[in-house]
Image 1 (cartoon, rainbow, N blue to C red):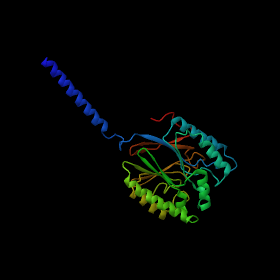
Image 2 (cartoon, rainbow, N blue to C red):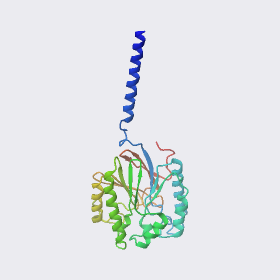
Image 3 (spheres, one colour):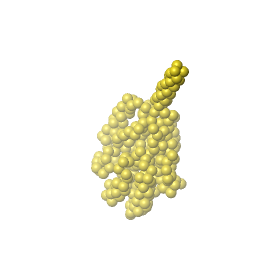
Length: 293
């Protein structure tokens, strides 16, 4: 009888120990960092309806964009973000309607985030072009959250040339600074910026050009982003792929859904987020995977 009671006590203690070990293990930080599950999203850019034919039609853009949206419905990313130049001609009613017709096919469970490009609001935006964009596509700068990622969307055309909309540019600048300051209160959040025109393509001190932000403005904003720990900026505009770095900040420029201007075929990136680790391979529209591991 005493032996049986002893066995019972030993087994009971063993069960209790196993329970608490399992409980502690379950509360331990995840290997992916920030105790957050992994997820992936689609980053697209420059569907630019009308570019292939210089605004004489957009059949090729339609084919490409429909294929991309079909892939999103099949692979179900956490969200889809389109980094600007939704259309080729600012305010073109037919091009805007076609973009919206195709995005309406996206599974409503998948959020869609639009970004203003220079072809959407003009190389030097005006109050009128911004109002028209907002009427058709929503706000041109805003923030959103996805798991451990905090996304900040900017209207880079207002940064590139604010001469015709100085008030709107100042409002965006004030909003950005306030938003970045607010991120100090966020715990375990990776801050990512999305825009159309990249700050730079390869190097932070590269010469000014059509495809990057002017260097004086660029430097000021780069220092601002680094101050608040921004690690990644995703952009488009270049119509080919490029990666640039400045210390711990990576500028990821993505090729087009629409017409390419380099060796990269039409396609998009599938960005996988594992805690604070990002991977962002580019897939041509003919090499989209059947599933994401």
